[in-house]
Image 1 (cartoon, rainbow, N blue to C red):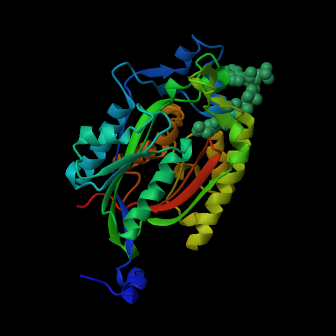
Image 2: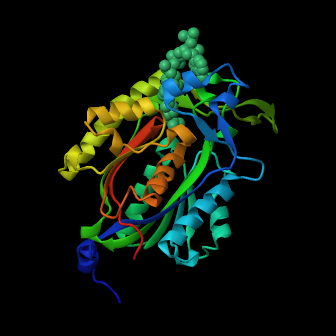
Image 3: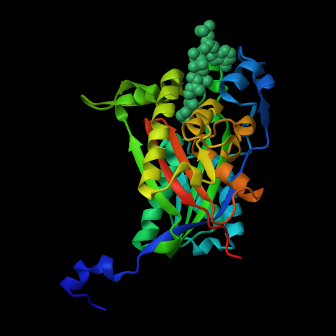
Length: 349
Ligand code: ACO
């Protein structure tokens, strides 16, 4: 079919409006548990301090047998199984991570493990905001009509990048992976009710995992850099202040976009960074504690994985049910932050 110039101009109106629905999820955690007590045998810290300041009791740490590819692939396969999809049905695999197995991209390795031959697979990096940014990005491909079935994965092994002698940061982080399956649906069923994405590079130095190196001669006047990435460096108090200021603002913005009140939310599903941040945001919106999802005590901050890990746990234990409205927000390095109001559809019956 050849379209006229007028038809091409009017194409958006000719295409039926589409939405995306969240149909399934999956997750995978390393087996090894490192309790606060065990960590205290390495750095000068203790269970009381960590629980009191963060809510964290233990974290999972990847073993030699684990890789970002293996954990993310297992999470992705669990989401495929719950959705009842075959890997070859997928159009896109979008991996949010800041700790790839390969700096050129780890998503294609996951594509190969799954056997998703028809899909395109690539990485997206936005630290702890990465999963939500990837979900929102994937939704645009689906809404635009170019893709029907997508897997979004959030996975990080920050144990690779933590300074295990720095008690101010090492107690916070853990490893894990989570995934969601998204599919096209009629616009009136759209599961992405509202969203917002923000970043502020002026505050980049608050939380970094920076590369540094020395110059060595190459040829003629040219030199080359040799070096590598260091370890996570964080101004904890600044990051805390940033989170408790920006997350409520972004959530208020989402509720206003959707014309909804906080009392209409079924769940608050925030990036699991610190229980005190979760409590402060919940109090701001008068969301009762029983509607605030948290698994920080068991897993700590797994960066891009926290939101899909928590989602998967709450879907599988029956707390999140089809039709539930979830307010979610991711925040972290960049600095970056964002939010989404999500309607959970669940797998087809
Ligand atoms: N164990 C025991 N004592 C500790 C520890 C520890 N693990 N860490 C710090 N302390 C001590 C400090 O040395 C300091 O002692 P001093 O007063 O004698 O110098 C004291 O505790 C207070 O230190 P602060 O750094 O001021 O502690 P604070 O109350 O700010 O808590 C924390 C630190 C938990 C990191 C907090 O600032 C925070 O949660 N910030 C947000 C961090 C965050 O969420 N980052 C991740 C988000 S982005 C992402 O997910 C990548």
